[in-house]
Image 1 (spheres, rainbow over the protein chains, first blue to last red):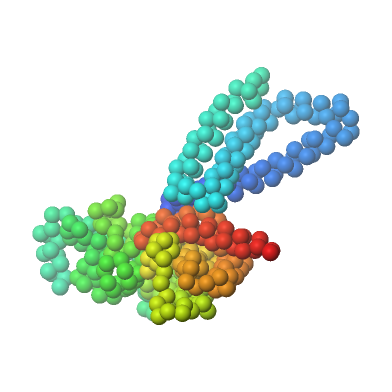
Image 2: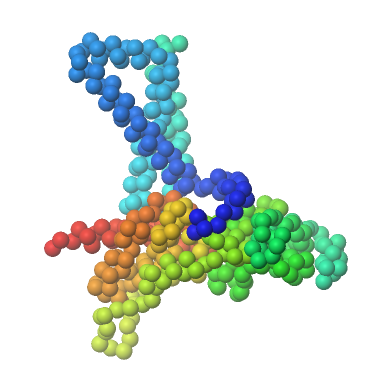
Length: 130
Length: 252
């Protein structure tokens, strides 16, 4: 279907506006999922330095934490993880067939709570970064 | 006709502009998709279909769209109105932002103007065997359904085959083999019908749990939101997923 006829610019123009809550939830869930997988690899890489010896591990962590960009990325990571968790819970309910009428509200709630937690975490992550 | 239309427009208290997708592969010069603007007099209670009919009858008889019953039962006039799949006959002009943009259903081949090829949609609908069948015939004359069971399938029986859900579905857009919300809903209507019996339910679950069946659904709820008959499509798909898992876990 989609492949068979190209309506050109008309097809794409303003298409994102038609997205509804469920669609955004899906996009964000995919995106955060990929970010978390990416993080997993760096996580393993950093942790692996402890197989050399304790001092190397401490040095790696300290040098990473001294970078401002890492501190900011940590806030982003928390935001991504929290949203993925909350939306994952929402999807669990969807799979169980519970409260499907309020799935859109659940998505907005997930967004608001993730935002609140992220904002609240900023002081912790960024203390002494500047 | 045109003069009368101009007079109508002059007399009308309110007029509304329609931007209508035009495309005709058979006519030289109309092969490139474009938008035509029609100005029609607005009347209280006017639907999108009414406006289109006015435009066709008064301004351009080549404007092509499907319509039949005009009361949201035949399922002919599912259109993409202001960025959303809606039934033309069920959508009030007053509900919409003006000017109203009318396009054929996305993710389907356009035959002409607002008419899309429905063949693929019908193929998917047929593939779930959308008719009552059973090998457990009752001894009496009637095959009665319990009130509770009727209530369970009630919403799913309301489908009018308009293809709005199929057009809105992101998965169906990328996967031509995906059964799509309407077909799965049809399968639900019969799989949940207790009169068909256990063996037939097993058969139906086998159909819907194939590779391009229920498991392709990513619960984006697009179909549920656009369905003009308010069928909880995602809910039905989810329930069939659970039924499929349950029947597969039955190892005794």
